[in-house]
Amino acid sequence: MKPLFYLLTSIVLSGMLLSCNGTSKSPGSNAKMAIHDNGVNIAYTDTGKNDTALLFVHGWCINKSYWTNQATYFGKKYRVIAIDLPGFGESGKNRNNWNTLTFSRDVDSVIKQLDLKKVILIGHSMSGDIVLQAAVDNPKQVIGLVVVDVFKNVKESAPQSAKEKKDYATAIDSLKHHFKKIAFEYFNQSLFYTTTTAAVKTRVLNDVAHVDTSIAAACMEDNGDFNEIAKLKAAKTKLYLINSDVEPTDTTHLASNQIPFKLLYIHATGHFPMIEKPREFNTLLDKAIADIKTH
Image (cartoon, rainbow, N blue to C red):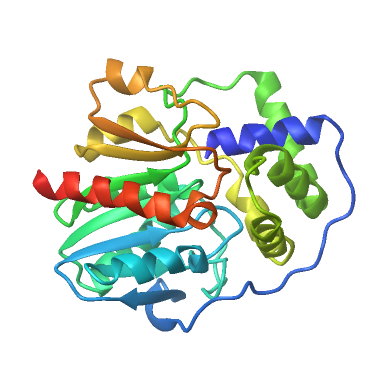
C-alpha cells in the first residue's frame, strides 16, 4: 500500500485541500452474506464450478462489481469468487481495524468457509499486499498469486525518517478531514490515463464519492513493517504481475532476491485495466492461470 499512500501524501503536501463528501453504499450485484470474519459480514459473488477457484479482491475505494466481466468470462471454466472487503460495497463495517493483516484475515475466512482447495488469488492495487499475506497464511490452498497494477518497484522496507513520519501523519489527518478533494485529485492525476474513458472515470469517481470516508482514510494509515520482499519469499510461490505499461515496472529487487515472477504488460491503460480493457486483461490473466496450472 505504500506507493499509493506516498502519492496521496504528495498531493496533500501540495496544498490541494477542500471539503469532504458524505457516505453511502456503492452499488453491487446480488450478494450472499453467509461468510463472516469475527461477526463482520463479507458480501461476495460465486460463479461457475471447478476445483480451481479464482478469488478476486478489489482495490481502494471500489468494490467487487469491478470484476463482473471476469466473472462472466472465467466463470465458464473456473469457480470465480469476488468479494467486497469489509468497509466497502455491501460488506459489513462493524469493526475498528482496517489494515492489511485484518483484511487478509477476511480473505482467509472466505477460503476456509467456502472450503476452497485450490485457489488463485487476484488482488488489485491496495489488495496486492492483502492477497500476498493471504498466500503466506494459506500455503496449502493457494496455488497462484496474481497482482494487478501494483508492485511497480518492490524493495526491502526502510525505516522512516522523522520528517517522513511527520509528513505521513499530516497527510492522514488531511485525508480524514478533506477526503473527497484529495482523493479526486489523486485519482485524476495519478490513476487515469489519456485512454481512460469518461464512463470509466465517472464510475470510479462516483464510487470514491460514496465510500465511507473514515474507513477509506483508515486504510491508508501505517500498516507497520509490512516487508513485501520478505512476504514474497515466505509465500514460496511465483508472482504474476499484470501491470499497465504506462509506468514501467522495476523488477530489479524481485530478481536480486530470487523471487520467481512473470510480468505481463497491458498496453496504455490507467489503473483499472480490468474495466478499461477487459478483453486484453482477460487474455493476460488466462496466460497467467495456464502457467500456474502447469506447475
